[in-house]
Length: 273
Length: 331
Image (tube, rainbow over all chains, first blue to last red; front, side, top):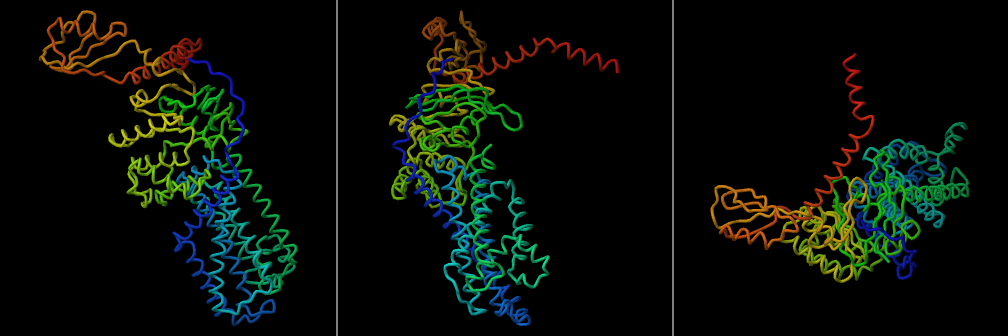
């Protein structure tokens, strides 16, 4: 058997432009994700619009008229920001978890994993995909909401930044779920047992001032409460919690989730044997 | 500089299975290299490590001098891979699959479109460019994966069973393409179960078994190690029994065909002389099996025999069996 010579010294990385590779790669992932959202729009865009329309009809028009005002505004107006935020959370999460997991399941995620793309680029690409779907659904739900109530935006910058940051947070959460998922059950557990309850209890339909002090304090442990209230603050100008605290919590969640996902991918958790 | 270097590469899966047990391998730039071995020998694990789909347990991998641990992205940029399993996005159009893959390697979209057309045409898939990949046959999917691996013009192309399920005509044109791109300077590593393909196209070869390289040499040298070959001769005469050919073992296959074992040093001229002396006329001749296949089986079988012999020679082996029997009889 031929004796192998020692390893040659590492070659300089000159000639391989990693910046260009990652920029073109990022644009490719984003285009692929947006194309996927558009291709299956009946699954990605329409259902949330129908669900939210039903919420407005039942909670807004039918029950809301009997409730009267909440937080100083008509009940339908009060729930509108919460419902928009709810659709952003579920859709940005759902987009990334289903896209990344189907790539794992069909093995075509390997197309990206064998390529020279950095994990930061891959994460960013999927997150942008999640944000795009979240914003697309938010826009549609806002149009639906405008048929039921007069919507205004008190603080556009706050409104926009909170919705984008929240979509980023839940895109990363969806990515983390997909990394660990081994079957379809695993991608439905988090939305069913954590995301939906936390969203419903996160001040979408009520102000936490209605709760007893004990449950108010319990509610403060729910990060979604801060996101919903920050968004409501942006639209209506009123909130149950200080806006600074909300930004701090959203940004902390963003950093923690990003670092966790990056470490998981670098270790090969869920993607390499 | 080598296209690929593996040093003491080891992989132990969490289940405890040792897939690679210290593999050393060097593949020269521009080589057409065969990596062969039985199922479960460690070929796909080695390819998985080179392409970053499998975490290695120990050892070093270097691609064109780029260390896979320290210069991972640069190393990966040099490699294109056609995996054994289908890993296409079934809901994506064929052309888009290629354009996206090019994008992951930094190839601009306009360039990627031109290349996609070139490779789809070369691999007879241009008519299918707008079809979703799930609608393709197995052979077409395999060809699409080859086009996808070529789209960023890698310096090292790894083909893991590329012709499985591909019909003969297309397979021939695929090998024409592979030969051309190899002549243009692309290094190719091939694993295949069609050993005649490896013998026809590869210049160097490594045989891996149970996670270890058991043979690594030029194809010419490896095939030369085969001391004996069996030829099937079709005769014009009709025979009732095997003819007596002094110095050769002969078997009658049917009334027109005989099998003759020829030692390497005997040569074929001497055989034809003996046949001619018996007034027999050869209409055609072929080898009974592929030479590399024969050698491959012999190497793997030899190793299995050595292992069994070593196991039998273990001091406690026979005693252990008899003790167990004794124990059973006592109870």
